[in-house]
Image (cartoon, rainbow, N blue to C red; front, top):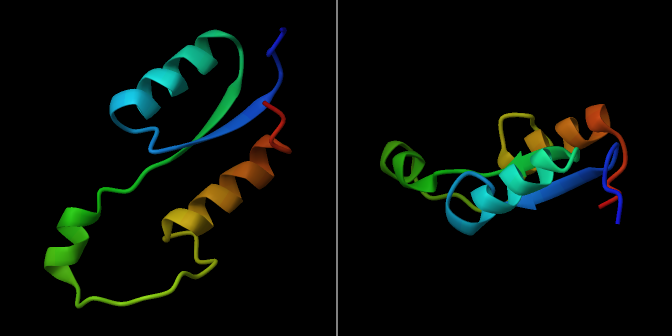
Length: 75
């Protein structure tokens, strides 16, 4: 299967298996959008909150923004 010029979103793509998948897809010519957030430092700095927003500073918002720039997810 030819994956060149395709776009993939990899959740947890910053470490472990997600990182390995991200690197392999990139090596195959896929445009990779990595969704990863290290929540531990954030938990120490802020009180606990629930919900998500479309703000680009949130993991969900960043992923949506990057996906719009990269094109539709196709892999």
